[in-house]
Image 1 (cartoon, each protein chain N blue to C red):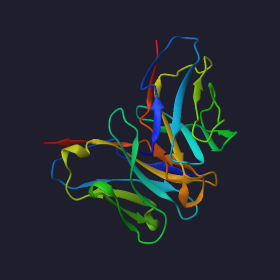
Image 2: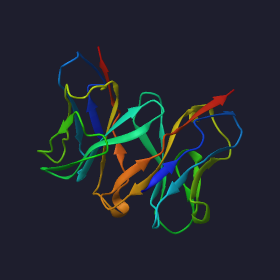
Image 3: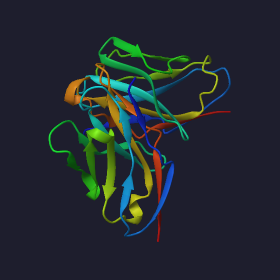
Image 4: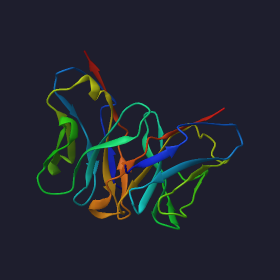
Length: 113
Length: 115
């Protein structure tokens, strides 16, 4: 069965530091992968997505993610974190023919001044 | 301005009551979804609908019911059979299910609290 693992429940980084959030997936075929961000008490906003082609994907708010098939990973990165990036981040993979998304349990990002 | 609206933002329910959460979209999307979010649990799929007058159970459908009488509306009823309904509920839609079109757009959510 398809699944998504986000190994880090909570990460704290200093403002201006680089960021990498980990995501590992389990899927038999070429996966469709997504990263979403959620501010407290809000809905989810799509940051970026990977369907095929270039394995380095650019998203909104300066985020990027790299698809590595050999490692079954789709890690999210940002070179310099801003205080407004503090939120919860969810990785998701398309699961099966019904088009449903399977979400990881999320990583909460805190930003130190 | 296209998007997904959910109402109410906050909802309080007494034990034994049914409550209905509203979800409306004006994106002309075929597919709509309901998720439940609990702290540390991520999002769990309750029900989804790929087309009007059709819907399927997700992973945690027990104690919930839905209808899809109109393309733009997908209300969720939390029944008294749902033993632990306190949670944050998110509605989403996508252009159509499957393929490259399953990028989902989310509403702002409804927080349900059982008193």
